[in-house]
Image 1 (tube, rainbow, N blue to C red):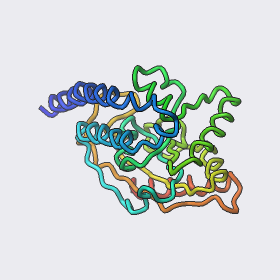
Image 2 (cartoon, one colour):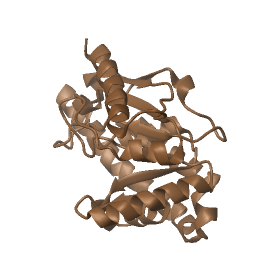
Image 3 (tube, rainbow, N blue to C red):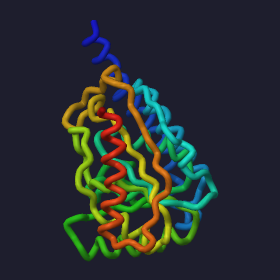
Length: 248
């Protein structure tokens, strides 16, 4: 019976989730053709994204607890560099729920540009990283800094670069430190524990009964007076310590 319930819940997530995603993608698509400044700061667009994500999180039946949510900035307070460890596809809608519609720019993999509808939203509203082309990466860093300076937008990224299914914190790319130094903005770290068990990287099954998802939001961290590597080590150290608390 438990196995049957798991299959039903998973089928419900993908079936209804597809319809919800199609509906919101079509609803949000017209916003992507507005002039750049208008579309990137459109609060209604990001509010729709939050509602879309709330629907997906509820469909997954996951239970989660957020610690220190007061560290998340509320619009229109000072924007930040938001960092999240990456262990599951469900990280993305969960973070969208946490951000509560605050305008932001995701830095995502270049490969996502070819996903129907979603690829258009990502290309027009966010930024896509091609890790195989250093010259494009440099242009993207300059573009991200330019876009972020224009208004109160977060930059949101996974410093590990890809998903890891072991529930541990892996090496960080240095890009976030570059953004923090250039923009003179704080890093707000968010560690998420448990999603790797509920929705593993190489599985389509979603088993919300595995565990309670635990989330911790860190205090703003500043790169002032530190080398890039020192700041990377400091931020990653916070993630390692918080994850160790959850795994203890």
